[in-house]
Length: 181
Image (cartoon, rainbow, N blue to C red; front, side, top):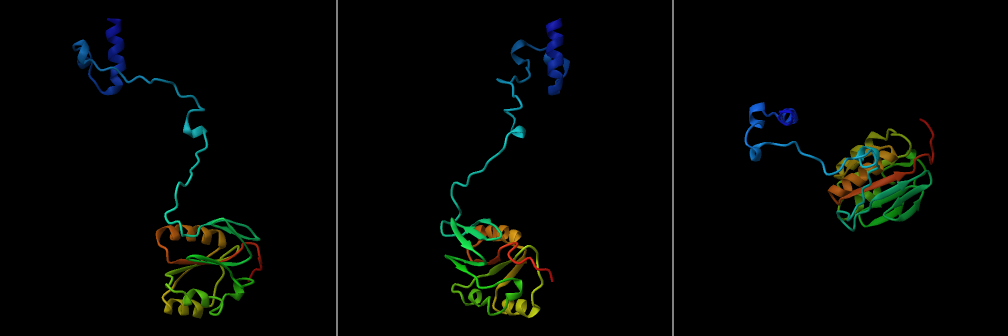
């Protein structure tokens, strides 16, 4: 009787009634038993999880791997200072700070063939206001602008590049000229 009571109490968590557990031996349900016990070292909560990219979505796409106040590492190439990342190329960008961003400094991006759809602007440590006429001009050329601080611009560029190939970035390293307006 004690064995039957034990079986009934162990089947209670399965939602079975005591009468179902008291049936023939081959129809009785037993709770699942684990083959091993997990220790805190086996639990993912206590271990670091790492992810390795096996293959990028496009071998020709450029990805920003790192940035510092001195420059950027893009697809294994190190660039010092401000840079322009366009499909299939990585160039120095001749600006000193966000104040130098103008129609002339962005000419490269609207003269490209094939046309780019979105230009991600990373303006340093924080987002700065640009001339509204510049934004209107770029929109008239069919280019959308994403104006962000450089860390967020890098992440946005990497995300958008994985989605579509017609993305470019113009980046000023954070901390290069941290002047306030």
